[in-house]
Amino acid sequence: MPNAAEFSGMIRQSAFEESERKGVEFKSGHPFPHLVIDNFLTQDFAGRLHDEARQTVADKDASNGITQSLKVACTDWSEFGPLTHRLISYLNSRSFLDWLEPVVGIEGLFGDPGLEGGGIHMTRRGGFLKMHTDFNWHDDLEADRRINILLYLNKDWIPEYGGELLLADLEQKDVRSIEPIINRLVIFNTNDLTLHGHPDPLSFPDDYPRTSIALYYYSHGKPDGERIRGKSTTTRYLPRDSKDISLRSGSMRARLGYLARRFFRL
Image (cartoon, rainbow, N blue to C red; front, side, top):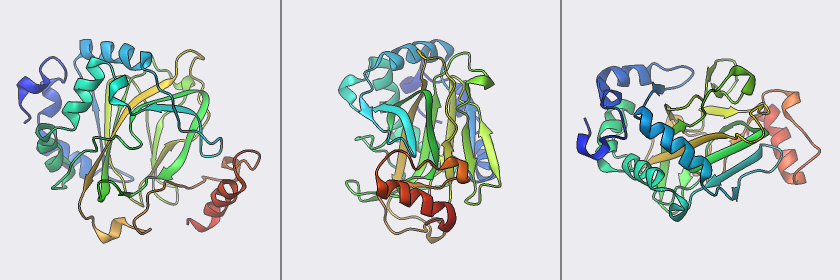
């Protein structure tokens, strides 16, 4: 178990208990290995982090109108408030990784201090993130992407808001839906087989974007069975059906590429 002094007042100690059982739960997750931990943070810390994250200037536009819409992010450590800085630092620490590695069954994991693609994510009403598999290679780290962690910060979520995280196989027939409620941590494998996203337009309140903190973990080397593409630094989006495809916005190359993947799973 991680050093309690490092996460005192921040993470509930019980979140780290029964790591062997959590490892079994992770490995048996469908449609691919994953784990959901509710009430990961102490109630007080989660409430203050919720407010702080939503006040952070998230000005990195991640939208193209085709595969992502109305989404912004912040990966700049200097913009993080003290609680966000403390949490992300801890989740990238060796102490936390010593707990994470046996849970996910991967040795030699390490975080990304540059937070490429991670940090604070906010998606406004009407926004979406189509089903995709992540970039599998980080050029600067010269490492393979292996694990995603998402911490949700959405109070009083109701089904009418939408925005559930969907996990799916490549055929999108085996699908799990996970509600993005506050203080819920989701850990899952990321590779060329692990589709995920929240593909339908959100109905969150106009002044209350869907918010999460995302962290990614890497290793040097990965099993061959987890790789369809070569070392790729791009995200691969796979439409669910013809209704998922709009040819009215974005570049012609992006539109045609997304359309092609509907049929060929490129």
